[in-house]
Length: 247
Image 1 (cartoon, rainbow, N blue to C red):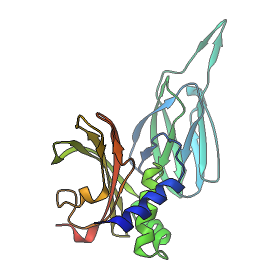
Image 2 (cartoon, one colour):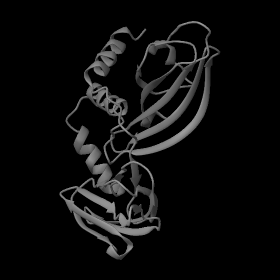
Image 3 (cartoon, rainbow, N blue to C red):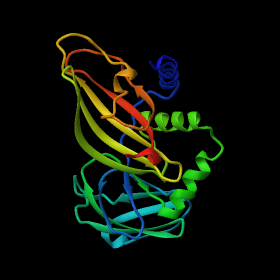
């Protein structure tokens, strides 16, 4: 049983902010990255270090500025009589972030404001991760990663892989692995699952249910977002494991 550990993780969920956050886009250095940005709202670019420069073509209808680790990009909106004309053509944006160059191919779209997080270069990411976790005991490292996963706000040095892999544990629960978060340099990995009730009755989902080799053979902690599911209802499940114990 994981009563004590489960209680700690449940209390952690109560303490963190409960408001939803939109998933962030990410872009690596030195590799051209195609992205979609809002053609009507201000878009934000976040650098893991300091932004040194922001280069774009004003002739393409772009405006922008930067300060510290943030840059803000907006496509110009033209007023044609009583109507507004919004940008449609892609533009190149070059961001010099922490002395690395990021090339973005930005296509304007009729969407809400976008936040783009630039991922650190590999060596810098390793150093940043080690610095962030160096003084923490293992238990607090695990809780920090789960808290970040719950709030959908990861540090820039993490390697995040989106995935859709179904895993069978019970006929009453449809389980899908949706995300793998590697904390390189620290030896931790978080797996995020979506668990959907396939039961005709109210279903109780406990952390102990996921202590299964099909989930992980190097498991350190499990946290369930919502422990009580109605028929067809879903919850998120977070599993933290040790990378060095991979089979």
